[in-house]
Amino acid sequence: MDKYISIVNEIKTASKIIITAHKSPDGDSIGSSLGLYHFIKKIGKNVVICHPDPAPDYLMWLDGVETILTMSNDNLEIEKLFNESDLIFCLDYNGTDRVGEGMQELLEKSLAKKIMIDHHLNPQDFAFITLSETGVCSTSQLIIETIIQSGNEELLDEKIGTPLYLGILTDTGSFRFPSVQPRTHELLAKLLSSGVKHYIVHETLNDNNTLERLRLQGYALSQKLELIKEYNVAFISLTEKELKKFDYKKGDTEGLVNIALSIKGIKAAMFFSEKDGLIKISFRSKGQDNPVNVLASEHFSGGGHANASGGVSELSMIETLEKIKKLIPAYFSHN
Image (cartoon, rainbow, N blue to C red; front, side):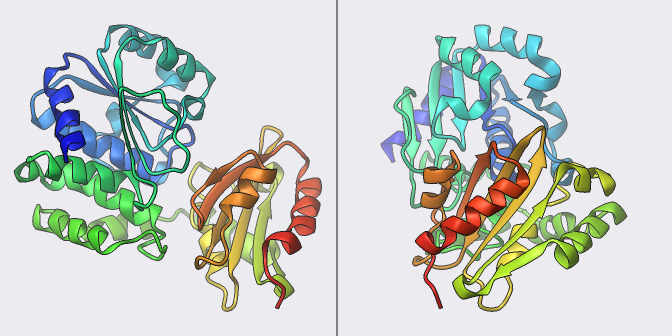
């Protein structure tokens, strides 16, 4: 509890605050950033969110997302803010290399106090205060704990709580991963009591498809879904050419890997997407006996959680798929 109080005390004594999160933003990085942003604004402090790149289209409805500055669009303004700030929050990442080269340089040069709030394994020791809880399902849950455990629960409202609910929802696969704890649901109840309309979050996330996105997902599932039945593994791959064919926009493939994982009997699923000569990989799995983070870290320069990890390959799509097929027997049990 002392650490939570210390974090809020640092907020109250700071004059210019920056909130950062990892590149390639997701629901938890955006949700935790906006939840903390609205909390800091509510206690009357000066705060700006500075991210490496923009939020995906499916999150653009969130209150405050339009205020987020990005290195891809506002690098000169962000550089000025880093030089002037006295407190920097590092949310949902465990090492400075996770924010991209441009922001990493600014972060490491900054003399501001840094506070890391994160739930990933093996955090680096670069922050003034490190709140690292690897057993917690999301950084958004840690933001709620910070607000409550510091004695500020009465400040929770719909504006603060909505992005935090979304962060937990998306980082747990709609509460399906083993990382969900009884405490998670206790905190969700507090968010609902503060005015969060959970049904609006679900509707906005799930009932906002474009025709192009549905056609892309239909193509991916009907033409690009492969099963390795003897190891209970499924995967989907989409090349850059295929994505362009369906007028791909950031976020259009969100959830595809979970659909593959939902197939009866499948224990692990992978999604491969190509961009600028790199293959980005999303790994998902079920249960404690099928971790995917080791595979991601040992072979694809990635890592993350046991049941939800990411990685990257510099090989071609064909070579990457050949590589993963050869590795699968070493990481997953044969039927």
